[in-house]
Length: 541
Image (cartoon, one colour):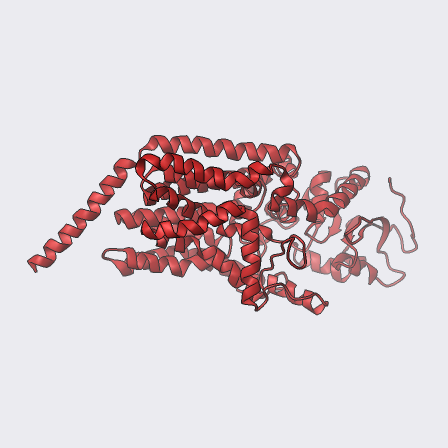
């Protein structure tokens, strides 16, 4: 009994000693310097992409902004406008900024919260790496590899969700490291709360929960079940909230998974229409190949290979568990590619195009932390030099080819948005010349919504598929319920088909303009007919 007690006291003394030693080496000044550097880099990137007009190039960025805006600017404002497939937290964080017309129309409403999250992610990574690898040099290497990647900087400058996920993932990492070193129970609570935010940002956050709970179970020195249960229950509040949202508003708890707007349903409709299966669909080799290829393009080959080399260093530093945690998002995407729910297209592999290349950044935090492990293996006096070398090597592709065409995430947004930006601009100019406040517009929510942001037309003046019964009535009988003076449609969409189905002799809409842009379906603009026989409407060109 005495031996056992002495052994336990000795173990607790060692833990306390390690904690005091770690705390002594973790001064505040380097953290402040890194915070200033991260803030400056992030702000400079936002300004650069804003000044060049690239904040709204990504179609998904535009959609995220408009979802956030419609929560308060809609015929039927409220929580239902959050939707069902994309998780809600990014839209809610953008909401205070999207309420401002200037910030909404320019895209800065998404840039501000995304940049703040990127800043927080960099600080969490710095703090975690210096705790893991024994010094500020390793922390600085990890944070600067993270902060100087142009693909990550572009995505943190626009209304995309990567920066939000990085903040949550690296916050979870930091508190996991803190708990392992100090056994402070509040770190478990904080880790659970941050993981909960991850589950409300992206679905890979859901994937983290069981693995992280196992980590806390085996890392806790006493009260293991309590640690795992507190983390698991706290983190699981996010998925439960989302299931409740779907069940309440759509009468289907799994609407996000199998509803008509889910990735699964969209893919099945595409297959039924004759589209070839996604690369990697139930093919492990291709799933790995496409993710591996996207990761190299996003990270740059030097950082990609530094990350792999750093795995060996992390094993020597006994930090394999931290890399295992950061390996979960890449694993999630490989599984998603295999199960067909997520496609990735890269330019050098069939079908030789750009789509979801940004998912390769799932391996980005892993590579940055692993590269920092190399610094941690160096002799103490050489660590600053090694850290500088690691950062320089990791950013070398962008130094040798500084033009934006070499940044795959920006290139994807530029290639895939060229036609959309052209017809959006032409349609917005048309409405600026012809629309009068209060006329109303019948339209499907989606890419078309960008027209109204550019033209300065509030979303509450549109009737779209987020407006429930009002929308359903208009699509079934536009001659009776389509009282809006205008309608905009992509040729063949729900609105276009509804208008074409109106029987002859009934008052409906007359097409007044068709916009044709190479590489895109025709955009149709209609005006409400004044009587049954009206065949044309005079509008300004």
